[in-house]
Structure formats: C-alpha cells, structure tokens
Image (cartoon, rainbow, N blue to C red):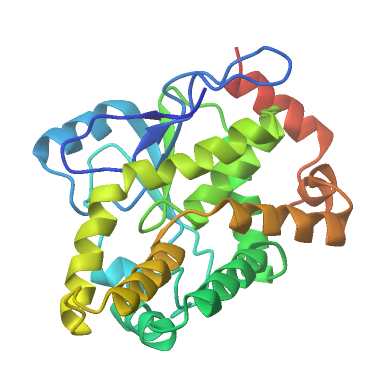
Length: 270
C-alpha cells in the first residue's frame, strides 16, 4: 500500500498518506496527512477542494521560492512557513538561479550529480535548520484537527518526501513500504519532468542526434529531478551513523519523545 494520489486538476503530486498499513496492522487515517508539491498551479476547482479538506498548510520552501511561485491564499486555511534549506541550495530548492546553477555544473557529469544529491539529502539530518523545522513540523502534527495537514516543498519530492518518511517511521510503517511510497513520486512527476527535460535540451542545444550526449544529459536530469532509492538509503545510513537508529534520530535529533509518538499514533492511526 502506498499513498493515494488525489485527483486534482492542476496538482500532480498531491497524495494522501491515509490507508498505508503499519507493521502492527493498523492503518493511517485517510484525510489527515497530505504531502504535496507547491500549490501555485491550483485552479478554482482545486482551491475549492483544498478549502474543504485542509486545515493547515506547512510550506518547506525557501523565502525566495515563495516569492517566485507563491501559494494561493485560501480562506479558512492557516499557512506556516518552515524552510528546510537555506537559499540557493542547488538541486533541492527550485529558485531559478539555483536550478540553473546545478544543471550547468553537472550537464556533462551525471555521476557528479548523483553524488551531489546523495550528500544534499544527508544535510537533512546534519544541519541545524532542517532539524529544527522538521521538529517544529512534528510539533504541529501533535495538535488535534478536524481536517488535514498538508505539507509541501516545490516538487514534493525531497523536503516534503523526507517529512513523509519521518511520519511513516514514527507511525510504524515498514521500511520497504516507505521506500516504495517515496519512489512513487517518479510516477506522479513523470509528465512534469518530461517537459522540463525537453525545455532544458533546447536551452543546451541538445537535439537528440548525438545519442551519447543526449543520454548523458538525460541521466543527469534524472538524478537532479528524480526520486532515487539511494538518496533515502544514504539518509538512513547517515542517521544510523549519527544516532544509532531512526528511533534515536527522532528522539535526539528531532526532540520527539515517547509520549509524543504515542499521541501521534493515537491521532493518525486506526
């Protein structure tokens, strides 16, 4: 079982964690925990659906990302900004300058792009800003609500993706299910990444005639814009190195104690 893609008209990677089963046989309650990419493309129908189902939006993007592609203001929904990365973190934040920088740097070096992304993911558990704001995010989830909490970054892949991993680990979902749900992002973003690739090929004068050059470029794009199992596995390895276990990371890195875990499971499992 994986998260369920919600059939918004303009939002391609908005998913309900509800229905995912834990190791004890319980399931995450539907309509309570929603992960997403940014909401700037939402049309009126999408906005109505969000208004009816969401109570709180948590935005993990940088201030510059918010300026470039602001979320719509939706009556009745509170919004909280908890940036996970600093400005211009190439490959993760999607400010125009950052995106251009990382592509230019690795345009002929997909292996460099792969290593870069693995290291960027590890920053989620080593840097003060992401640790503090993931902790604050979990604190928000401890408050009972009638409707859902929706969290997002730009694509809904990296920062929002790791938030989903943390939640599923805390709620007791097995790791194989967590990894499959993380990789489901690739299906949700497939058409979007295809359009990005075509646009960038034109920008860098790659017309497809040079097969080797085209394949190298597409491999680099896949590493930068795709969800890769090795990114999450690298995170798990770093967590084990620093904290001994994911439970140790939740307790010592995020400050979430056993009573908090029990409350989260009470609020979000059935």
